[in-house]
Image (cartoon, rainbow, N blue to C red; front, side, top):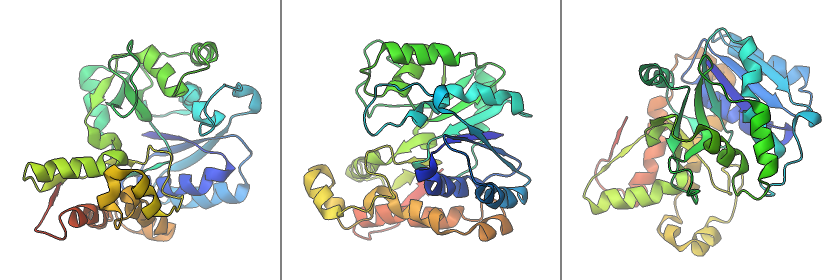
Length: 307
């Protein structure tokens, strides 16, 4: 299985946190990093030495300035966001047709390989999670979130130049890379359940709805995605934020949208990760994630986290 990421030098620490979470649950994988600078030999050796102990390998692909047109986009979107357009460039290095692209503002909490069994059953080149958190273009009713995408390289046929050209011709899109991928793929993808790309902005809403229905269980997400402007590595005054966003006022004493789970993976050291069996850390991750529910019900009775 192949994992793909994109990060410039400022985001390498966050990439490493996500990679730690991936390697808690995977072995025999290839890790590809799109990078806009030249990575240091020390960083490559540091990551590669630990991956090797999981029979895995680390590669980076230098996307040069000429590869990334100066798209007209929102300030919070960097040109490297469009790196997912160039994923087919990596297919020549594969020994496996299973590919997974991951944003770096998320953590992985389970093995993800079973997605490809579903894709094979439905003969789909792409799999993703439906996204209802953004304003969906009227001409794309099956809109997906592009922060977590699975590809079968044997079936995937989008051309990078088509994606680039369409982006340049539509400079005012709110989510340019995501909108363009949706425009080309449309409904031709396998819709995965939300746990494969669970956006933290839904957390408190979903807890509240479950409690109103007298249900004390919640899905433990295979991928927890911080797909909002305020990322887990940005330490804000939580009270001010929750006062401003009144829907979250009741969560003001809780950690910010599951940041505790991001912090957990960040705190793990590589030696510990590669020395212990895969899936070893999942019970701990579940326990940490359950703190959100314990707070929501004021420490009330047991809440089941189901897979």
